[in-house]
Length: 121
Image (cartoon, rainbow, N blue to C red):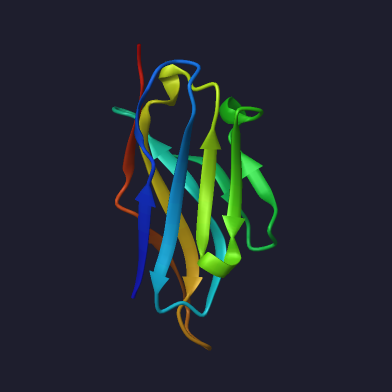
């Protein structure tokens, strides 16, 4: 089994910054894609920033230039640096990873429990 532990959410004023972390642990042979999604009240979950299995990065248009995703492969950890935060960034942020647990096993998607980010004055 694989667990994703998120941290770093909280309350911040508009224009402020937060850094989210997501550490994967458990039975991990290889992590392919890994990244961040978010879900605001009454809205569908959307991709925010991800590393693909080819290690390319993608961002939703609304965060380009403000958010930066990075990863530490040795620690199976992905980070999301969020700058110039806006009230519309308020959401629960979820970590996601596409993982193969052992050689020959199928790949599966795993999700963290979510961390709340609130941008408000």
